[in-house]
Length: 149
Image 1 (cartoon, one colour):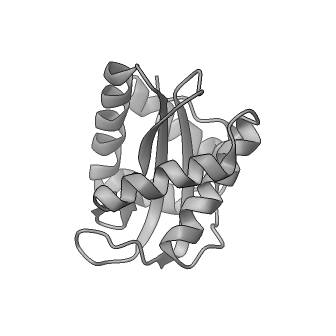
Image 2 (cartoon, one colour):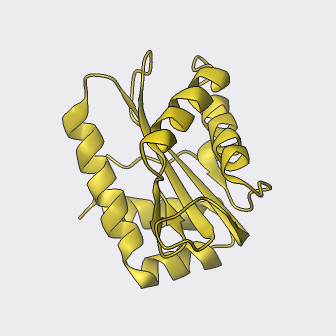
């Protein structure tokens, strides 16, 4: 299920670089899941980025990782109007971030969620709606619609 909490939505990220963006997203996750250590979370995300950038192109990045101690799948959405250099595969700045964190041992749910998010963000109309959203509920509604598919 693609559940997105209000606390895990950043309508205007302040970050200008990749590590800052990962840290900002990790802090938003920590606000929703206070039992998850933000430093450990940042470390797990940075390790995943060393494998290969999760900047998938078209102004989108989907940082994702399996996190020890997490009890449920957690999503975080971030948006940057100006764009963030994220070493994306098309070398363009990233404007839309969806971070997916999964408990270890839940590979099926993790992969299904990653596929749904990818399909959601592949559609130009959805990317445009996310860029134009003026409040967090509009973002949640779009994710909820994607979860129904």
